[in-house]
Length: 267
Image 1 (cartoon, rainbow, N blue to C red):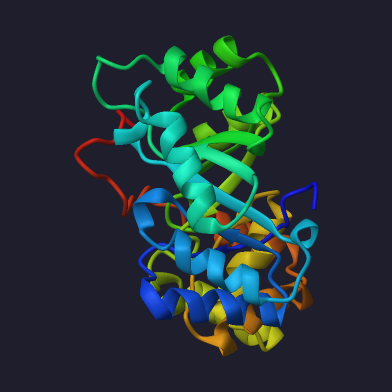
Image 2: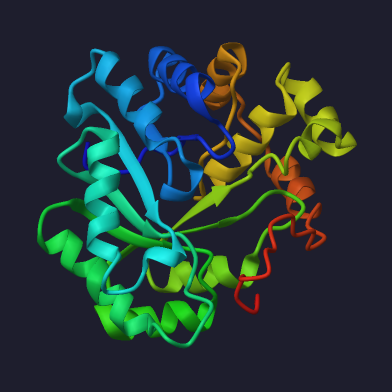
């Protein structure tokens, strides 16, 4: 599969047999993009699920991410080979830098160079970043050249729409991938999203996913429920009006959920 599907299945916080079963279920209901990371500690389970799915490798788009503690010269390539071994794959479709390196002993230029090398070796078909600021995207484009970064995966949901970063990505032709698209369940309790959903006999989650597609934002929601996975995948049946889209746009209040102490200075 050459292009990243509009929606993938996120696996953050899924562990052990729960992670394996959730990915098995996701693939069985029709998901074709699975997103994992070294830090999640579930690459082996994701790999098991892919192996047993019966799907051919070319039908599945797999993303993983290099943790910031593995960005140094000694660890980077070894960590990628370890990820591939756990995933039981010869290559990933997309390899991301999970977080920009927070210290000054490893330069952005050096680890992006290593990222590009992974692609040149055929171990990743596309490369990208996650949690990068506008300034870091500018730097990355200088290092890698235009068109090399496939996506910037960022926190994005109706309450935190990250518009400045989205605009910067659009200008650079970098796809925007939203993690935590449901704001850890907060969208399910929002009156605006509930009322829009009621008009279409749709869940607030389906409403959010339909809004994201209209706004050209890719999404990787996470779920352990096969029913919810199937519902998420069926969001395409919800055709939002311009009025609905505007109402969701207006929910933005800058409410950031993910802000670890090693995060960059956000835009």
